[in-house]
Length: 361
Image 1 (tube, helix red, strand yellow):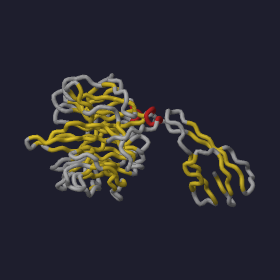
Image 2 (tube, rainbow, N blue to C red):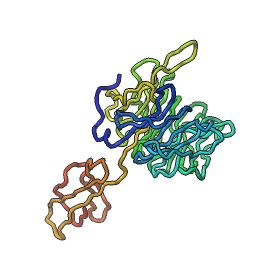
Image 3 (cartoon, rainbow, N blue to C red):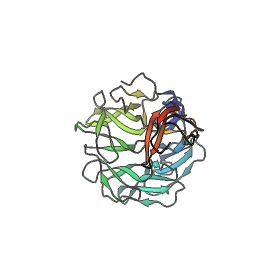
Image 4 (spheres, rainbow, N blue to C red):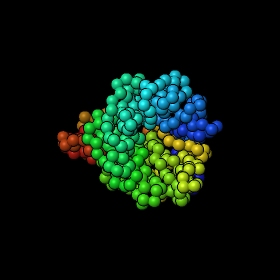
């Protein structure tokens, strides 16, 4: 069962979650607060609207829709205005993910009988094919620094998480578990979350590995039988993983999902029960995005030209965005040996420094 605990207030206030939900007998796109509360319907169209993703700063939403006859990528402002089509009508296009700078999408496209990974500018110009595998390539995600793309591929005979350079070169498999898919980069780019069926019982669990594929760890296995956990995205602070908790039932030899609830897993205290995100039971594909992309500023107060062996260093910082200052990292350079961390992630704004012969802070 999900935890009754609440997400941090600052995370709720400084982020949004977008997801698709089956309400009123149709799939539509909804945008909610960072804790899943107060969902607002974004789309209202007879064909299904699917797989949404928020742009940096959560100003726009990209999603997949069949409103023109085939599945194509569309973009709208977060309030639903200024709707426009990105990909041209033709083969199906789906699953757009934003680049960190908000200028391009990576997505999957069905061309000549196969799904492959493409990139395209946000205005629909310059589409480029990155993969060309006879089996499925898709559910791609851009690394925060824009240099890598993680994606799901079945080219080795089973689903696995792969990574490639942003130009399509260097395609390499990272995951080792069966049926690994749905990769999501942590905001700092050091880890990838994904889901996999590691014990081959057909039900997926949540895994995390380093960005190079090392140190894979299973963080969560659904507590109920006949239930999947599918990864959606990380929280903007890099602590929580939003995922779908999907319950299934078998009827006459076929499996049907009966409910899908959004939850947040604490990747630090992953043994704790996940926290529910909203109250819907037919919600899919959560995308979490921060509202603040303005970097904070900081400074060290001027030091005297001549100082005693031990002296007090004072610093300050400010943030024009909505996130505020969490902590400080202060570096020192001693004897021209390069900069080293002196105060690591502290909340204090002063400390006594014991200097060497020549030190800079």
